[in-house]
Length: 450
Image (cartoon, rainbow, N blue to C red; front, top):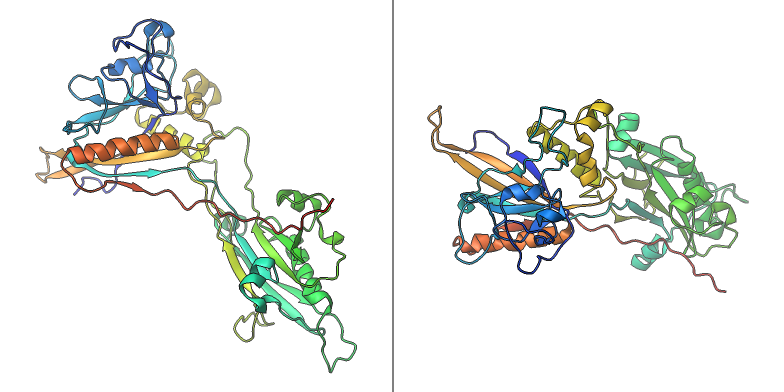
C-alpha cells in the first residue's frame, strides 16, 4: 500500500533539439565540444549532473533548459539505462528552466537541476506514453447525405406537404454547461407547406430540400445553438453553409451559402459540425480565476413528434460520423503542469506580473511553447518506507513525467523496456495511452469543372 492515495508528481522537460556528440568528447567539458542529445535526452555518458545547466560553448556541453538525463545514484554521472545486465538504481534529472542562478543580491541556487528520487528498477511499477493528438469536431449526418445514402438508401426520406417535422438537437459538454448551466437542447420545426388538396398529401418538392434548409436555418439563428453547431446543407453531394462566415469556418469556398442553392435537388441532407470556440486571451495570467477549456462539444439529434417522442414513427436517418475528440499534449496543458511541478521546488509563479518577471516566472512558457503540442512519457515508481513511525510497512509513490516529442517517447520506451528485461522481466512494461487519432472527415464538395 502507499502512505498517500495518489502519487507525488514531477515534470521534466526534454525539448532540446537533437545534437550529435563531438568526436573525442570530454565528459568534464572542453571548449568547442558538445554533449550528445537525442530528442531532449542526454546520451553522452559520464557527464556530471551539475553540467546540465551548461550552455556556454566554452564549457563544452551546450546543454541547458530542455535537457533530461539518467544519472548514477552514487557518482551523479550520466548513464544510458536499458543496457544488458544493467539493473542498477538511478535517478532522473533535468536542467533548471531558469537561466540566472541568482534572483537579487542574496538568493541563489536557482539553476540547481530538477531531480527525482532514486529509482530502483524493481520498484518501477508502471510506465506509459501519451503522444500528442489534434482535436476534431463532432460530426452528425442527417438525411440524404452521400455517406448516409451509400450506407442505407432508405435515408432518402419522403416529406409530405401539410405536415410539420421536428428535429431535436442537443449539444453536450463543459462549454455548454458553462454557458447555460445545463446541456443545450432545442426542438426545431420545419413545415412542409400547404397542399393543393389537403385530403391527399403529396411529397414536398426537391426531395425535402426545404425541410433540411429550414432546420439548418433554425440552428444557425438559434441563440442557444448558433455558437455550438455549424449546420451544413448538403444538396446533390455539394455542401453549403448558412453564411459566408460559417462557410469559411468549415473550409468551404466563397459563395457556398444557403442562398446560392438553386438546383432542383435529387437528394438533400444536413451535416452538423461541433463549432464551439472558447474565449481565449493572448496572455494568460495563470491565476486561479483563469479558465482554460479543451473539451469538445458532443452532438446528438433525432426526429421527434409534436410531443418530443422519437419512437412513435420512422424518423430521419441520423448517423454519428465522428464523435468530438479532445486534443492531448497541448502546450497550454504542459505549461500548467510545469508550473505546478516548479511550485513543488518552491519556484512559485507570482500572480504579480512584475514580480513574475523578476523571479523568472515567465520561463515556464518560454521553455515550452503554448502554441505547440508535446508528447509525454510517464513512470510510476515507489520508494519503500523501511522505518515508519506508525509501524506500518508501506511505500511512497512518485509519478515522473518527461515532456518532449514523439521521438522522446520512442527513445524512453526502448530504454525502459530494455531496463525491465535487464532486471529479469519477460513482459513489456510500457503501455500506450495515446488517444484515438483525430477523425478523418471531409465535407462533400462537387469539383468545379473549368
